[in-house]
Amino acid sequence: MQMSRIKRIQQLGFKYCELIESVAGISEMIRGSFNTVYRKCGKPNCRCARGVGHPSDQIVFLEGSRSKCRVVPKEDVQWVKRMTENRRKFRRRRQLLRALEKEIQREINELEEETISRSMGEKDWLK
Image 1 (tube, rainbow, N blue to C red):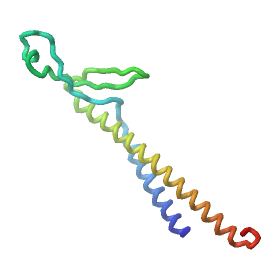
Image 2 (image 1 turned 180 degrees about the horizontal axis):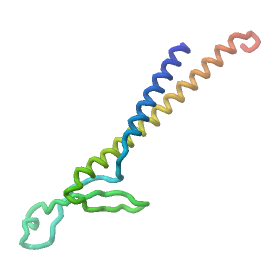
Image 3 (image 1 turned 90 degrees about the vertical axis):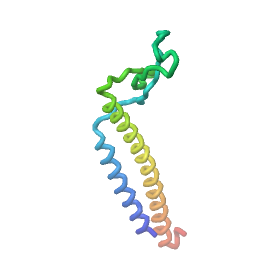
Image 4 (image 1 turned 120 degrees about the vertical axis):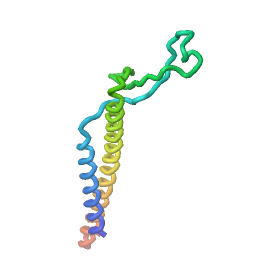
């Protein structure tokens, strides 16, 4: 039983290392979410007055406790999409790391209890 638990801890450790490498591999990211919004310009004869509006690409992010919104130039749209997706990947992987840490700790705690129980069982006066 103890060897299988040790193997399990080792496997979890390998997964943990792989995840750390994937997190460390993300070298560029920015906060925020990319959106395309449609705004009406207010001119009564414009096509947007009767329809959806003019498309505008923007990024929304928090700076301190305040929400900020910036228009993204056309030439930077793909860059912003890539950078915000990198941040999402980073955060998802970090969440997986936390879950793995908890699982590793749980396995180590159980290994400790099994080892103590087995060791104490060797002496009659500790039973």
